[in-house]
Image (tube, rainbow, N blue to C red; front, top):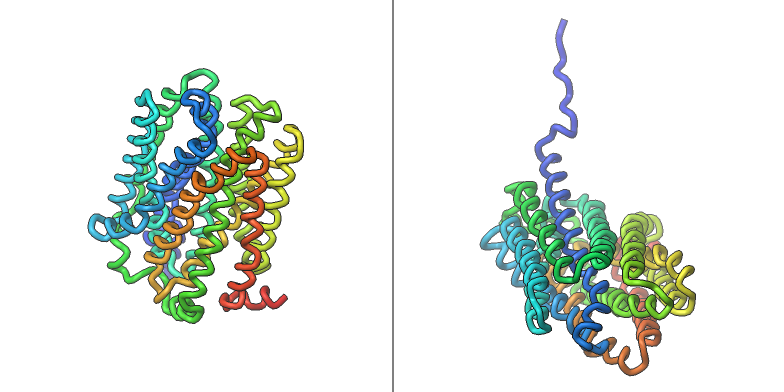
Length: 411
């Protein structure tokens, strides 16, 4: 009688275990950093009251964070080639936590500005490096894990803003920021413990995560296809903060208290998290083109409804608004490897995040903040809806450059 050795479970596969640890580590990190980005919106009315700021100045406060985040995307990628992705991710998260701790210690506007810039600089590390780590770990099967990674960011958006809104009912904003700084320190420790050592290697050492088939297909659309994708990403990324900048003030005009504003951002975040999951599946079923057109038109319609409706219906609407407002990005991020110029996925992610986040950061004070001061929050939010609609012609132009999406674009 011969005894057959039992087949090893996929759960026991060291490579699969490392992939799960990688996704868990960068997911927790993403939730923390996206939560850090969105909690600023809840604090804008507080800072407006304390420092007497107009809308353009409030937009500039957020730009100090997102501008530093955007400007240092490519330098963070280069630093990771020398120090390793894991080390840079840990240091970046620790720097973001230190920035918020400094913001909590600051008593004046200048100290707050410096602290927000430091926090944004720390957050610059996680988008390109985490995306590249996932793409390298999962190879040709990376689109699903990338969608999961984007989903975790919305969990942070759903959790931290309402937490800050709740803390503000009992504490001052300084103490609230010290609390979220402590969460950042814990996240940095988790990344250092969970992220496998292999994942800390710089992108250049592996030659990129995309398999030859993907690289070959990516070369076909040329740089013009990637340029269109970046332009679409810029408009999509700009529409979201352009609306969220004014959401606290729109809700306040409808009678919402500060804690209700925090709940409203939680509803948007929950809808956004659902949107990352739903839109990823829709992109597979309907194609990239149809899904992006659906979400952008839905975003514009939902923003206009949020402006016009009273508080109760708006709160009911917000999860659906978050779904379409955030869902597009999951499709766009997953398309970056397909259109990466010369198959350089890590460089493509860094460029994509630099341009989309950078242009969005500049547009806030220079365009949408000035617009809010000139015509009021409602009309400025309506301009965000128009920004979402501007994606439609660009997406139609890109559809012919997406080989995998050709059947959907012809339909």
